[in-house]
Length: 485
Figure 1 (cartoon, one colour):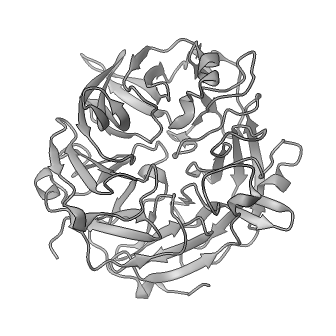
Figure 2: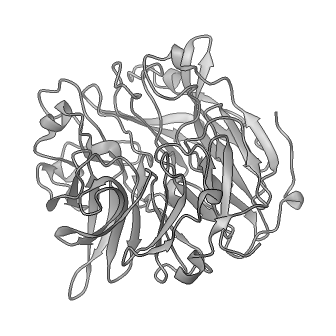
């Protein structure tokens, strides 16, 4: 079902509205947002927006996106496991258009998994110039499950000419099987190309490979393909491929029965076209990668992040930080990732697996990284933990108890001031929590049961624009605002 709209019928937006075209608001996946009115004092006024009512069709694992057509017109984009893509009015939540891409795949038709049915799991990506919406959908076809890449017009949800692209058919000879390959990472749109990453499914069944494909969006063709040499090595992170504008990076998980290192448990740097060298400059894996394989202690449970770290006395260092299911933080140089076992620092930061996306606060004087910690000993269990990154070290700055497992974001009023860490107690108390990013002090305590979000999924995160936070719950998008009603 599709309902056409025009820009004239879209609601007016406040000055704080801005497009959010990809997971965590940027190709680097830093999860940083600028909301000019959201000061630390204003954070205490955060509450559910009672004027926003937005039920949607299907379970939601993907982060909502925001497309601002013009200064005064925009829409919230939501993709679901029912293979439904919906555009919502950003103020009321009413449906502007809805497109169903094809039947999702029931769990009984897959070798393993924990999503039923499986359709669109990874966060779509928007072309920042046109607003075209790109999604990977698992479609039930007469030939079995097939990953298909769709492109939709942001104005009305129509499928663009030349789409969908059947990944398995396009990757003939490249060992890609939609039956075993799962997709839960965010899609990356970069310089006219679309990058999509794949892993397996919950249960680690079948002969899947960590895989990245590149789509030429102008020609609607497969333009690049990379896969781990060994079976396994899935790219599980919610952020999927990430970039600073040139190279493309992914983090991989455990490989299966690899006697020599074969691309698992690693940060991998790829060039456009997905060329990858064997130089140690372009990959990092811990020295105990084989032990991590055996213990299912993936390095790739979450994305590594690129960081610009200030150096005392002046200058900066370009680094990457990876967080593993072994509880370690690995700091490596971006200029030379270091190959096997040569990080700048390895620091234990958790007593449990780290599997949710990070958020970064970076200024000329400090670099901080927040993550959900399933077991921070200092906080006595589940917590939001903040790390202070120096050129050669990772230091735990603070932790704050959190009942739930959401992925944090960080807001500021101008890129520097009033930094606040926000996180949902996903699958826990299902409340929104806010902390002063510098001290960890609580600035918003959840607001009580009337502000709860029903049915949040693991790893749920927040999208911020239009003076609101948009959060996916069970078959519904919720909006929070700090403006009076």
